[in-house]
Length: 339
Image (cartoon, rainbow, N blue to C red; front, side, top):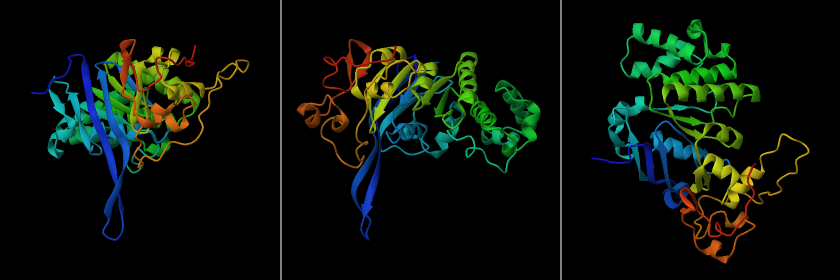
């Protein structure tokens, strides 16, 4: 029988997703793209964990591997179902996955491409209910209820996606994710495609639903202000690895990894008279198919030493067990955070 701490709903260890690179007529494997490389994370029940980092760092691949939308190369994904049973998502076959899908759902990034334009809202939201065997008279009432929960009129269920704005479409996507009462919702940059004014409405809705329904979120974003508002803890990813993991306020005020500090410095201050934090990132993210012996951030880090280029740092606790960082110089650097 699988076990994990009672307060956790998700516990991921050693997660990897490698894509083979093939060459030649015989399509011989010549290397691998290490999209996710040995990720470990835990999500407590009823809380939100944020995954942040630059585009291409492996956030979405990590989420899709956890969901088993794609099959991971290695690792264990322990997930607690609503009935208390613990399963290893990485070991489930297609039939078993179908049985646990109702406990883990996803809200997608683009509200325009994630809804089928040929289906009315009723059928879009009811899709997961149909998979679970619900009859029309039951799921129609459920869809009506869900539309009201996300702030839409229940009469809208007969309309098609083209009749809605981006914010309304994302509300429909959220209603679809909530249709089967999931224990965990994976939100993949759910507001990045929306106007700023609409973003605030959707974020408030996400937070209200968590409080009312006791939801747990794995929240993916590149906007750190969004993560600060929504998440209890934050994991910073770089080149497929987690380089820092901490309580949200602790991470924003006291970053220990140079990459985290650089991400925070990139967020402009609303006050035009405030000085820019000044730290900028040079260069690009290295090729994920190139094996790096040292710290993956070393080529772009102004604090890098010889040991950083030769030896990969481990994700170790600093001060207390809730703030972990993978940096050889974390204990000696004084990095700028956000007040």
